[in-house]
Structure formats: structure tokens, C-alpha cells
Image 1 (tube, rainbow, N blue to C red):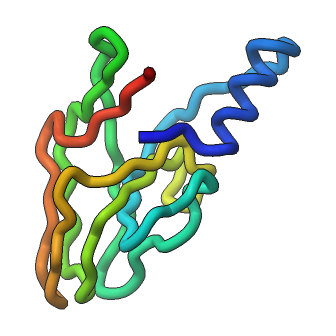
Image 2 (image 1 turned 135 degrees about the vertical axis):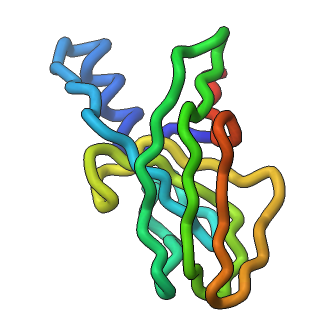
Length: 125
């Protein structure tokens, strides 16, 4: 998991210059078929009924915070999902974090894909 260029810039400005960074009011889990890069915008899944899903996180434990709700994406296109991004405030909001799934998911048109509570984790190292 990596913070995106956008989040890194916001945190540096907030910490070093006092520029206020307002935390997002909602977060969305987006799926990617290849590395979304540190921009968080590349290679997002399209097609089928794919729509980014709301995701929430529990309090941090050490340097980790895990998802506190489940997400189900239905009627997916034929795709191999290998990466994810967390976006702020809307499905098209600024990407904050990107990561690689532990195991890529090969989907056939119409398949669902689900992530249970705790399966998406953000680590600060």
C-alpha cells in the first residue's frame, strides 16, 4: 500500500506550512486491472456494472487500519483485478492510497467480487 502523490503533497503542506488538510467525509474502494501508479488514476476497471463502493475503516492498531465494512461488486466485466485505490468523497474523487491485492482475482463477465470486513488494510510504515 502506498500513499498517492496527491495525499503526500497534502500531508507535507499540512505538516510543514500549516495549510489545512480537511479529511474526507467518505471513502471509496476502486478496483484496478494493473498498477494505478502513485497518481491512483491509471488502469481502473470499466464495464459491466462496476461502480466503486463505499468503504469505512476502523481505528488504527499500531500502524494499520482495516476496513470495517464489506464491499460487493456485482456483474463485473471479464477482467483480472490486481490492485485497488481508495478515493476521497466520491467515486471520482482524489485517490489517497493505492495497493496490490494479495491474490489477483480472475473474473468472467457477470461474476461478483467481494471483500469482507478487514480484508482491505492501510499500513503506515
